[in-house]
Image (tube, rainbow, N blue to C red; front, side, top):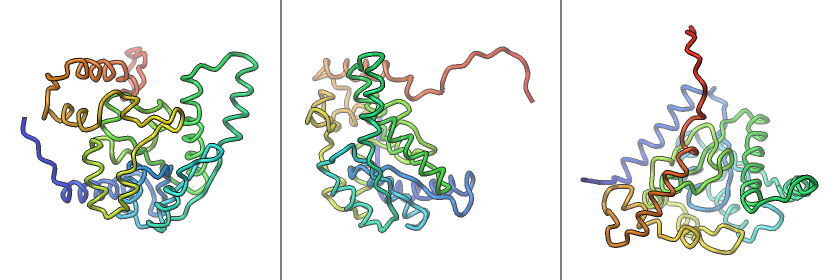
Length: 252
């Protein structure tokens, strides 16, 4: 299978795609509202939106949960792009909700991990409702492929500029757009157990990306191939529309 990634061409097409989305689905005043983590995806997605719409139509939302060790990265991004931004701390909200939940049922690790992501998405939609905005989904193809996202959390949004690009490709676009290296190449850490994303996954994004693009069949590491395939199968529900019963009655 042949594969060629033209960074300059893809970046131009991506910027145009965002412009067309807003032209067809919004008014000239509609803002792009994006959660700012200070990592590669939010950095690149925010930069693309600024290129497409102008900095006055992009709003960044920083959402620490209590104290955030790398909050300076988020501030560096919004300052670099010159976009309006809000810092909304979700710490008390998460604590209050989990405390209420514990009165009825013991939270599982999955609930503890996913709830803050869903509260962050609720926050983004609240901001969007206040300013007249569309929420930017910042997921990329690599993470989506293996389900490394939270359904109705960071996997939600109104439009998704990066979800057809692998991590490797997102990094190339970030470098092409001239974003600070410390943001584009920041090592992703889950913020919970101190492990990197790749340590949690059990394989590198480079391995995953070459497999997704057909550059490697991972035959030399069959256990990794099996794991990636299993994760992809198990998490397809995050990528597909909600199944619905169809009664067969004609509609207009």
